[in-house]
Image (cartoon, rainbow, N blue to C red; front, side):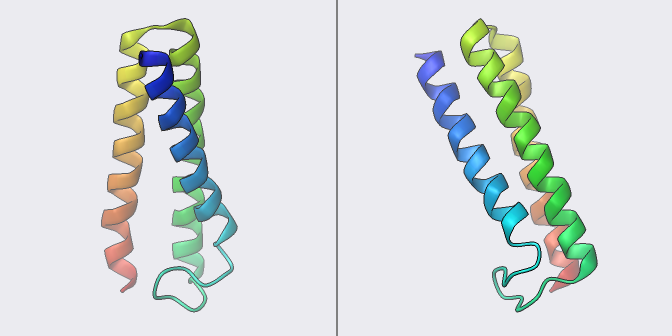
Amino acid sequence: MLLILMLLYAVILVLIAWYLLSHRHKPFLVFTEPSTQLAQTMGLAGYGLLVAAVLSLVAAFVNIVNLALVALVLGAAVMGLFGLSCTRFL
């Protein structure tokens, strides 16, 4: 069961990371063109989510619960910090 859930979590993280990385120079939410600071923040969040996705894949196949917990916390922390930092650009 842990394998399926962590694989699903990794797919979701990769999709969100792809969206953030591909929209650094395209319209993003309410911004017609993100500023350079917002684009850098989106890049950092995208790469952080990719790291969390790789960790969750490793945790799924090795079946280490503590590593899965680290991947979950890292993904949540990256998205939380990205959400908080987006308020500076509104």
